[in-house]
Amino acid sequence: MDYRLTEEQQALKKEFEDFFREEMKNAPMDYSIHGPSEARYGTKEGFEFHCYMKKKLAAKGWLTMAWPKEYGGQDAPIIHQLLFNEAHGYYNGAGDDAFGVKMFGPTIILYGSDEQKKRLLPPIARGEVQYCQGWSEPNAGSDLASLKTTAIKNGDHYIVNGQKTWTTGAHFADHMFLLARTDPSQKRNKGLSVFNIRMDTPGIEVRPIHYLNGRHTYNEVYFTDVKVPEYERIGPENEGWKLTRATMNFERSGVAGFAASRRAFEKLFYYARTTRRGGKLLIDNPLIREKIAKLYVDLERGRALAYKTAWLQEKGKLNFSPAAASEGKVFGSELGQRIASAGTEILGLYGQVERSRWAPMNGTWPDRYQNCLGSNIAGGSSEVQRNIIAWVGVELPRV
Ligand SMILES: Cc1cc2nc3c(=O)[nH]c(=O)nc-3n(C[C@H](O)[C@H](O)[C@H](O)COP(=O)(O)OP(=O)(O)OC[C@H]3O[C@@H](n4cnc5c(N)ncnc54)[C@H](O)[C@@H]3O)c2cc1C
Image 1: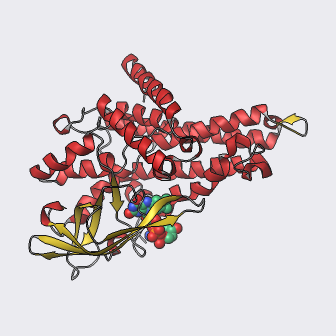
Image 2: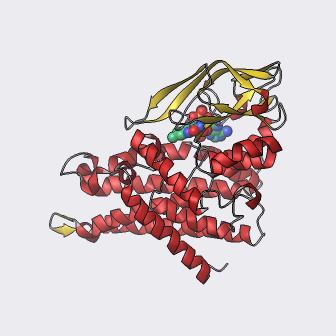
């Protein structure tokens, strides 16, 4: 494979980087301290800035550049999306819409009716609506097919009862894409359907889940006799699992996470090169040098993996493989954890200080350390990704 970018690609990369570097200077402080979900959904100011950026990206045609032209996209080549995601991830850019643009929109494009495409896609493409993802339940995460929330048909609508959990950003969202059981007599992945639900529908209650760092980013969502019109069901009744599998594959991508990790690494590297402990620069300590070198190699491996997958996809040599997405997800999220862990060791006891003049690197590291486990679980845990790689990627037998 050829890793070199064409002149056009280099110019585009620069345009994306210049844009995010400048725009993110206006971002609330949270964007310099917290990861993307925490910065966007952790405070009202963070969410408002995210909405402002969504509209800016839409105006530039970048928000839905991956969508087909007929639905307001640009049919952008995969490499262009990769360059956008990389710049966006590096600057912890706001506005990129994981739920509406990257997950639910493409699902509607594949499975929605013409009426649903006309009604639901344009507000997503203009950056006017915020979605959340209503899949996981207290007893249905990795084993999503065992979910219990029901949507029972009653004339021209459905009545929804049950509970979702870990719903990122539900407290700010105005819509949810919900997976619910429309035929309780059927088991597991049979008898499920997908719905577009307005979060202001009577009977929906959103309760906060406070994370390890005390912030409110995630939620429980309770449904009590919630009335959902039949026209909000996406795709055929009881065939929601097929749609959800497609949505899952839109969810996992790699390069933005590697770029975000690279920026954290660069700050840590700078700290080690400029900070003395016991009269010596930290970087001159062989144990620290080795940690830094290993992380650097892993970051380059991660970037190469993401570029290679995109390059193969663009050349048409790799139809989408869930194993390739899982590889990027598991390597990227675990690398984030290794960086958080190495940084915590390198910063030493002061690394635990958050709001004080004694806090190194503006007190950002405790949050990174507390948050990094979540990304190994969100979007499918590392163990589950490894199963997919084993079964689909290298065709090992299922035990
Ligand atoms: C930060 C965060 C944000 C999230 N945001 C959302 C959201 O917006 N919307 C949403 O619907 N969900 C969301 N989730 C939920 C997420 O999808 C689930 O937490 C995840 O799928 C794991 O499910 P679980 O928590 O029920 O754990 P479980 O499935 O109970 O897993 C427990 C442990 O068992 C392991 N395990 C399970 N099955 C297997 C297996 N077959 N083989 C080997 N090991 C296995 C898992 O790896 C894990 O270590 C979020 C989660 C987190 C942490």
